[in-house]
Image (spheres, helix red, strand yellow):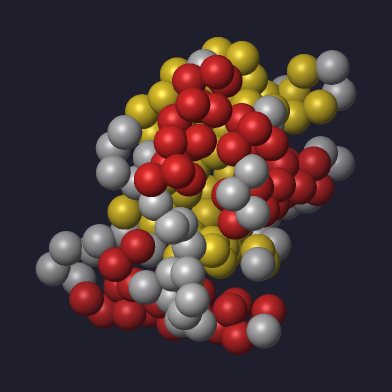
Length: 160
């Protein structure tokens, strides 16, 4: 589940960038490694929650395929906080996300993340150039961790 950004100007391409991000999370949630990788440019980069990196669409595919083979991944819940167009062809999307572990109904606050996606338009289609998934640990700020978890739980309850 994704909520749209609340207070940023609209670009005609904003829906395309949101749809790209939605597809990214849907392919993660559905555990479709090849569809996930197909959203990236050939020379794209990802930085995972644990700091792992993959460079290039083929490496991204292999990395995500390995994650899906090795882990029972959760389902992302997300709130898009900002979409900023750096140029007509490059957009930055910032979001917060939480994971609902398999077989559970609530978000695990330990896996909350700040996500950043840079998308580039080529041939009238946006593709991901960079995706970074950073833990939202909020060291020494448990109030911020709780606030984010509650915001994500609100989105989760609306999607149920």
